[in-house]
Length: 137
Image 1 (cartoon, rainbow, N blue to C red):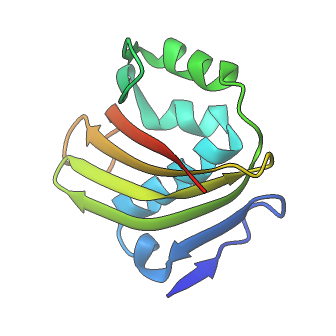
Image 2: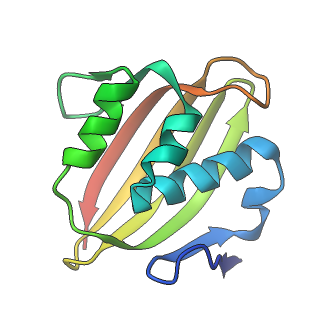
Image 3: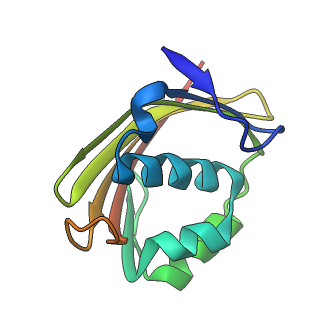
């Protein structure tokens, strides 16, 4: 069962109700929303200075907070109009999210992001992301 979160009237958000029932799940839900909205201040606060972003099929990996934020800013993709988070799974210092984003240009992409945090503590920041993204109809 999904519900819509009213974070932004321009972005429709669908997420299972239990996605916010644990601190790390709540952070990842917010992180994915911030990613869709390109909320750089929130994203910057959630990643380590030496973060690494591996986008499977795209080389090389992105290293460091500044390069990460610059890559997000420079990506010429249409505005995200819908974010559907299917699952958020957490275990120790690792986590994963998957779902589908729909863009203003009518394209949709299925995604899966694997996260590694700097530690298992609730305050730990994201130190590595591996992204799998596939265009879907």
